Image (cartoon, rainbow, N blue to C red; front, top):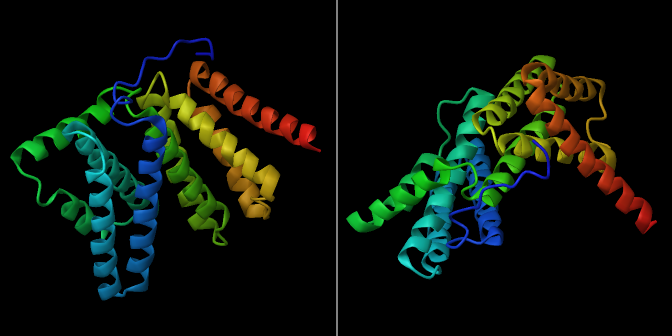
Length: 252
């Protein structure tokens, strides 16, 4: 496991270029974040209006793709992203459902004819069939999910809540590294590098509890992952941090 390893190609890149994949991940994040906040506020009318608005914008974006397969993949990326945000939040915060998310996911698939639904199902499955498929989407998606949970963890004032989020985030990162033996550790390394950069550039994790849980996260990953995974993973993350520090010195 090193940078010289030749990675398999992304078989979906012809239908969705890397920039578009990353855009899909950000759109999914924006949709989830908006609906989650409205759900917390308890304004059903505003929530329903937001679901309708996000559905409309999403459909317009899907229709803008050239070709039926490309449109099916755009929809599959959005549904995958929104669903994974919802699953991560339910797991981390012990939720059974998130108002608006199920409604949006259902709305995005409503109206598909038999052929369109079959193409959607095919592309939805293709995203998970190979680690390298839609890898730029997966990288952007998982990074933002993990960073959001990390920010929630270090913002906790309550120790029990912070430890619960620590366990959830650590479990997600460990599972990702094990479930994707070729690329999973790279996705985790990317998240760890961004965590370290937030600490260096923004002074994040500055409270005693935040520093404790942040350190515990790194320790847990070292303890729970085999050395053949953890060593290149941490080396990869550290290289990214060193490169950032060098670029800062060059700029100044």
